Every structure is written in structure tokens, then in C-alpha cells.
Image (cartoon, rainbow, N blue to C red; front, side):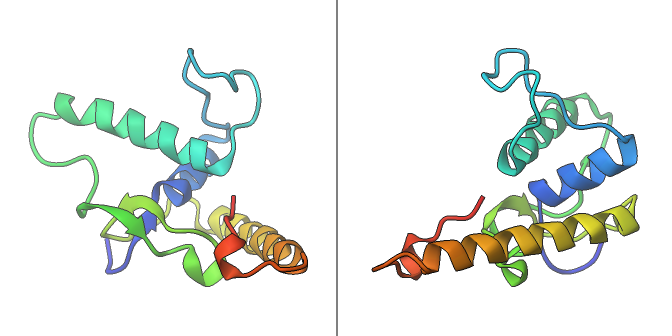
Length: 128
């Protein structure tokens, strides 16, 4: 793990690329059976990791400490959200690069659309 932040959204995308399947919604979730929004996929992975942690014999499942405002998506025009304080090596870096490019294009389109509205300002933009 290296310096910097990583969001659970990024970790979820890497997990999905490595597993070659989407994260499923929790059984009681209203979005069961559909592709989950990015933030929800990050939340599902965080819940799964939190549930696994107590079952380890020693150490931590994830490196770094949990941070509430991870900034790793900001350069892409994204958002701050819950993540970790240590950036890992991704299992599928080529798939992650593709996903991050798609996320950047999505964020740029949202910024452009929302800032084009009459009277809109930066404070009106909530991404993803």
C-alpha cells in the first residue's frame, strides 16, 4: 500500500473487475436484482469487509485507517466519500484504468450539465 486515499467505490470497482461480476445488493435492499449505483456498491463492499474483520485471527483486513472524506476521486471531478488512508495495488489495474476513465467522463458530463443551468453554482453540483 502506498500513500494517498482510496475510496470504497474504487475498491468495489476493482473487486468487480477481479471477480468478473457485479456486487449484489443486500437481500433487504430496494435495488435487489439491478446494477447498483456506484456509491451503493462502495457501501456494500464496506459492509462486507466490516463483517469479515472480526473473523480474522490477527491483523487488519485492510491497510490504513478509515477516512470519512477520501479525496482520490476529486481529480476526476468526483466526490469525497468514505475510504482508506492507504492506497493499494489494484488486482486488475487495466480494468481500473478503464473504469476511472469512464467515471471521469461521467463526472465531467454532470458538471457541464449542472453548471449550464441558469443560476447554478459550484455548490449546486452533487455528483453520482
